[in-house]
Image (cartoon, rainbow, N blue to C red):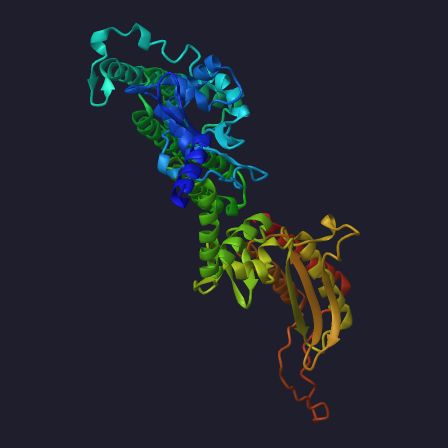
Length: 556
């Protein structure tokens, strides 16, 4: 015997270990690789090549009759879920090892790891079979898809409706059209029921009228009713036995439509949420809540669309792990390329979380002083007192010290009143006491009526210094307002009252000057002002001034 003959006999003996002929049908049974095993199963259950006994060879660990039934049911499961087997994608390696879909790498293969993860093939000895756990689940999966049985409709179909047209039998086309009409009718009915239910819940939860909320609830119920119709259609379609190719195409359309409608549902849900949030934010005095509305709306809708697109990619056949990995890498690349933008977005989030200021507050940041007009995605707009507009990046606002003058409890006013050096001490004392009485009566200044031991002294009016050309009286007061214009008006009333008090008492304000007195000049007297220090006169003047001030502030 030659070496070539020995080699051929060796290959033949190895081949006979893996291949055998079915004694009844004469069909070759090949279980050497995952691909050949799947082909043996499904290839022998085609209408023009129907050998269920051969297909049953792929079922492991049960009797021949039980294996035959389970092989047929497994094919119906694939069709009922619209799963199309691509033989070229199945590994053809006898020693194939799956280290991705199993915690511990093993000789196994999952044809549909995401849509049907419980079904897989496994190597027993030198042959590939559907695994023991798969065989145990077949009946459960079958009854979950076909509670009434796979051929419940087909067995009552007359022969004249079994003629084929465009790849399907006439009864299948008829059933498909009737199923579509039925689900459309359910869509209309469910839409009305759902809107009524949502409207009822809304009235139970809140009676506050929210603009266009009923319209938004109607828009929300519309795509949701379509989703309900699609789920009903997915329950009906398996009974039409459309086959793997047509069923896969039809279920792919339904899956795509379902994701699109879910995107619309969540977009409308965002609109409903924003409408409620907008209504509640109008009740608060913090205008920053109103500014958050468009940012929150756009962010939520962006997230809905992004997740919807990812889901569509998965429905179209993309590997979920590859999609997540691609999104992570893409997000990292975008983040690196737009670091400043990302920093500003985070800064925006920090502003809305910490709320260091609100719209309309007067702030000072990095030498820029003005009123906050807008807080955007990337920057905030500050309008200065001269109406200049500054755009400050939100990242800078979140990291820099911000002096929010709008959050002051009081607005402090401090000045020095300089009076002439020749003012009599008793007049100075009465002038100081008169200013204190004006402050106590002033409607917006902090005084002893709202003073507590835990606060600082409510105001200061004291003779504190000998100036170069005046006797200096400290005036330190606090206005109980956060509004700039109101503070200015309060100053106006206060200073005007002090000025009238000074004029009535004869107290004169000094200004930087030099006065030369000729005290020893013959026949002349020094030119000093004449001050009235008569106590009864001073008390009368004080009373008149205070009464006049009371009348003035009564109109405030």
